[in-house]
Image (cartoon, rainbow, N blue to C red; front, side, top):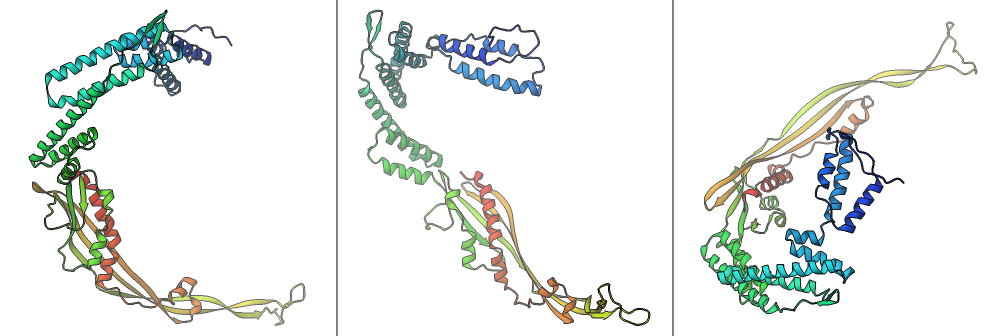
Length: 445
């Protein structure tokens, strides 16, 4: 295949063929460099109507290809020039594992290692001279960076450049790391203890985070588990969900319990805890979600009667077909010709329609205790319906169709009680309550 560069005409777009892309990628990986104007030249070669659908389909894959190519072309030398010393070290070490005698990579590694170590040591010196207790966390992280960098470089050391042995002196950073961790833990523990004195919920949560850092650094810190438990308890927002029935009808206890059968673990979050039962009289709740039932309307038992007369022609035997002389006519086979006879029958259908309805209305309100105010109020409602249709047939039931005949088998039933009608609202009312609580979660923190 001819891989020569084709002439580009101004104002026309171009799509690289597979050979050109292979050459581009090969050059990038061999030289580990890509001219920075390459992207600009690529976009300049695009046609003017860039938003044309067909051209956009070509543009998107090309941009992705260029992104992949560029992401792998940041050489150790370029990283060193940009001041990304740790990136330069990582790339140089990777190359030296393949070729331990690569003088260029040895030189880059030596320079980047020295500069990055000098910067970190200078940073530690500044932080220690500054003398702020909260600096010990950063001091530990800097020492850890020094130790990790040293461990990485030791995987290719010692090196040999043109007969000259190059090694990197070992420094034991462990004692400094242990000391910094201990002092950082001391700071977090002391700071957390101070935060616990503020009696502010947000401070308790911050104190929990401080105690957790102290435990992460020094696992057996004295009394740390008790501190964490106390901060968690005091920092937790507690929410009590309850039914407030102000209607004239009283609910059975089982009905209220069923309404509050919420998926509490799904509602709970790191710092919010929902309850449907009061833990004890001493528990202080930060929020109350009141499910206020204000109106329960149950209609009286209603019966309506609907009468209808149904007529229908049905088959009623047969008669012989006679000719003009009164003789029975015969078909070509000699058989007597017969014709069906019909008669009209009728039946009165008396339908009794029993009905009853229940409607529950109220709202769900979120109340904050400190300061005491209503944050949100959402209306809720639920309805249940009872209907029974029974029928009586008076007359010839042959006039009825299958559906009408089936209704005659249904009898009048006792009406459900008012409590039964309320219980029938349970499922739809539960869904309304859950939906309101879910939507109002953003007001509770």
